[in-house]
Image 1: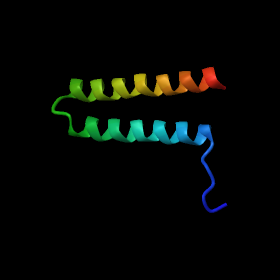
Image 2: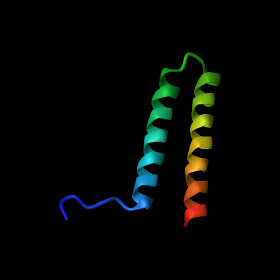
Image 3: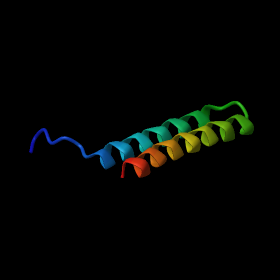
Image 4: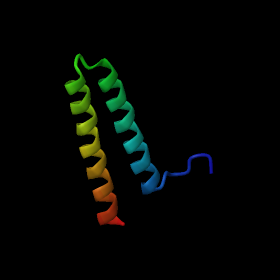
Length: 58
């Protein structure tokens, strides 16, 4: 199983983790508290879309 293909759930999790990681970096580098909150809020919306897609495709 050296080149096993990732299951869809694993790729969704990887995408969610990537979104969260990017958002945390953006929040840390943001010039204001509001900009930090915007970055995190945008990430939560993006994560919700990934989860919604996962639920639809079960």
